[in-house]
Image 1: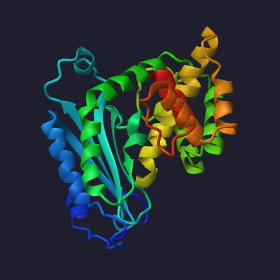
Image 2: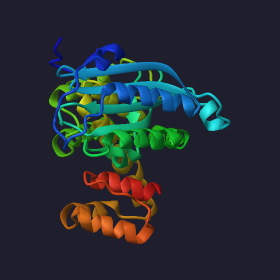
Image 3: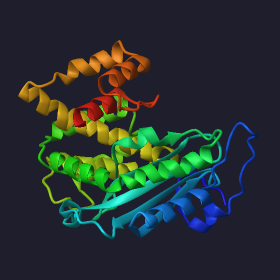
Image 4: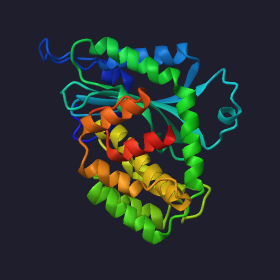
Length: 304
């Protein structure tokens, strides 16, 4: 069986794929090890799994697991009273060196299963070298133990998007930027988004000129992303929306921060080593991944 494109598959299929031999310099993290440890750590941390979905391509050389979960013992009213977003945990793993192991807590829109990945995933990506198998377990554990905190942050982001108006013209301009500047969506996904804007497949409980509706039209199209891109595309899109649509306009209106100038400075004059030195000097706490984008940096600094 050969996957030419991303295809939904089964846990058994992923677990039975032979492991490649890349030599001592590359530690293969098996899909089975990721699945077993994910389920064990979720259960040990008090989460129950409502649904699990697996996708793969290229003979399962790249695989993805998505789990719809809920905390069985939470006493947090914001979490227990939430009816629109469910908690989600996701991972991506590869056998062909095309992507690093990634995992993240996120959320899914219950009515349509659109996924939201936000926040700390960049800090939990690991190349398959050395102690990668051990590090995979630690990364899973670190994400899961912060699950409720991250989920609540996503709920707050959703509320901010629902309170933001986006005209059709503004939505079209954002689509152009997401395609040409950010390279988050493809031309095929643009066609999908335009269809959703004209005739939505789901009721998102908001008007068409609402940022939350636009957000869901895009995440609906991101379901077509390959497994090795979906998590990164989803996070990049979330950071883009929060920074460019929610945070930046609000800050400019209040006169707090001129984010346009900050973004230009990061883009044109800083390399990542400069940014890392500045952030660490100020806070001593923010870990910067080498692949971090200026958009995510602005979002993280503002949110913290």
